[in-house]
Amino acid sequence: MTNGMYHHIAQAWKKPNTEILRKRMVEWRKGEALTKVEKPLRLDRARALGYKAKKGFVVIRARLKRGGHKRQRPVKARRSKRMHTNKNLKMSYKWIAEQRAQKKFPNLEVLNSYQIGKDGVNYFFEVILVDVERPEIKNDNTINWITKPGNSKRAMRGLTSAAKKSRGNR
Image (spheres, rainbow, N blue to C red):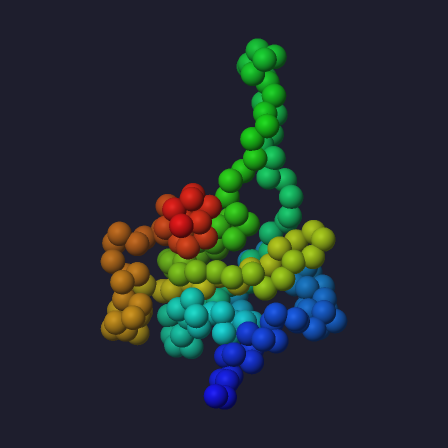
């Protein structure tokens, strides 16, 4: 049996060319934290998560700083017994990237996201967003579920796949 194009793209991402990826990440570090991109970098992953190359679908590259998930010590107004903390943030970096994309683009809805790279300082994700007001989206039977009012602000309400996983619902 022969394998299709998406299979070969997926195989290439299992062992990516580190030189090319390193050069890309140098460019990404210089740019904005949330950047709109023309096409997804990992087409196989984007298509598996629901992306289609049509109007209404937007792909955002998100850059997040790694670390810093430990909860800060209270500044004041507690007795010394209650001043220490040993709790960490339970949210995944992926969920944080989705929330930041949702906040920057309030007219779009987060569909899903995937990781495209990480270095010593940053994580890089691509977040797929959908414009729910476009007629192309409203008329498409595979994606028009996202236009219903119950799906507004999905990332903020913890309804995306990464959010459900972080909350222990999967």
